[in-house]
Length: 293
Image (cartoon, rainbow, N blue to C red; front, side, top):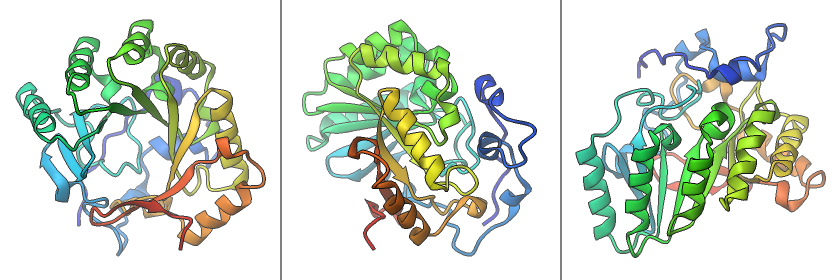
């Protein structure tokens, strides 16, 4: 199961957070290439969460009856070394014709209530393209809500403009923004300004994090992260158990270790600050609570 080299990409803001004097810097570990990526573990999977099994096209994944994943771009502000779509991120995005076909599919499938925009990072799209896409999706009668998964609010908060916040807050259907953040250091003053702008525009803010060895695999690191998110107006939503992505075994911890961390966090944090610890089952079987054996 050989893997092609994954290009390095880090935003200037995140690059400035790296402490060159710290040999195990949690920001550098997420974004700087490592020789460990050439090591393939026996349990690595080419399609770790079953995207390909449920793909309707190169930009549309329909795993659950009531919701779909739509990938409008493969561009990201950063390249996370543990990314489960690292074989596609940074590549050419879908054509306008393919996106039109995806919208037609969603229009035809009356059971779809939620469209989740992911990637890549949807907020890397030019404003007008994003506006056109979101308005087209919001106009579908049976679609009740939209969700955007994004690194932009933390990694490139300059893109969270007044116009973008207004667009997300005033669409015909509610838009939930799920920000990807793994360490409290990522919640910079610039990020807080962008998150505050979104919150004041009426956009519900959630977070998703990945439990990563050497980044946030301690009670203190997770407590600081989730507390900082709540203080920034972001509800911690998901803590993902790491996926079995080829070349990322050095990031993975065991389920029992993750469960022990969550058990230790419960008496230290309010319910609002605690995310669900989630395992995305291989083979496209979907997410389950990882805290339940």
